Image 1 (spheres, one colour):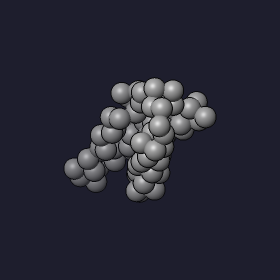
Image 2 (image 1 turned 60 degrees about the horizontal axis):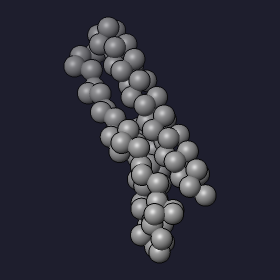
Image 3 (image 1 turned 135 degrees about the vertical axis):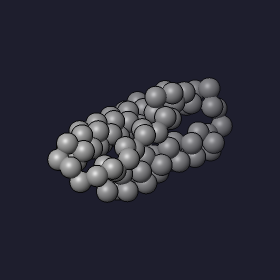
Length: 85
């Protein structure tokens, strides 16, 4: 569910950044390469296979790690975009 809210934001930042670069005349002055880690989409964990407590808890841990990776990636995009100003 958080992914549904976060994904458009990450994509919008990437689109804005690429648009800004394409409209600038001197790319060598304003273009800073995007770190490769920001371009790799975190893999969303599969839902639990059954409703056992162990499966649900394992999924909760994996999903928490996934959300943390998304947050770190978003922070990275924001940092990359603001360093360019």
